[in-house]
Image (cartoon, rainbow, N blue to C red; front, side, top):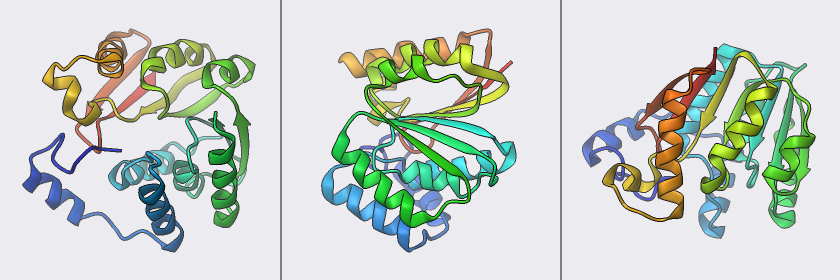
Length: 213
C-alpha cells in the first residue's frame, strides 16, 4: 500500500489515474474499509486492477501468494481464475488469516483456495508447485529469499508480480533502512537475473512484473 497518493507519481498524474479506476463492488469496498480502519496493508486498487488484467490474460492454473493479509488479493485474483485453478496463499498471523478466510468465503470464488499458516520462508520449501503465477507482498527484507525459494518451483512463462518495490518513494530517494536497502538490492537482482524478463512500474507503491524465461 502506498504511503500517500504522490509518493511515486506527481499528484496531478496520480489523481487523474485514480479517477479512471472502476468502482469496486460491495465486498472489496468493505475489505478496503476494514484494512484502512485496522491498519492492514493491502494492495492498492490500481495494483489490484493490474492483477485482474494479468490473471485474466495468463489464465493460470497454480497461483501462489506470499502474504495473504486479509485476503484482498486472493479475492481479486480468484475472480479472474478459471474454475480448475488453485490458489495457495501464506499468512503468518492466525487472527489475520481468520479474517482472510471469512472474506474469501464471502467471495464464493470459482476456484479453490488453500491457506497456509506460518512464516513464508518456512512454508515455501514445503510447497511442491509448479506455479505459473505468483504475487509477493510480504516481509520486504525477505523478498530476495522468496525469489530464491520460488524460482525452482516456477514453470517457463510463469509470472511474478511484486508489490511495494518503490517503498513510499524511499528506494529512489536513496534513503537507508533495512526494508529500503533490501528492496533496492532486490530491484537490482530482479532486473538483472537472466532467468527473468522484468519491468518495474510506478504503479501503487511500485509494482514489479517478471516472466520466467
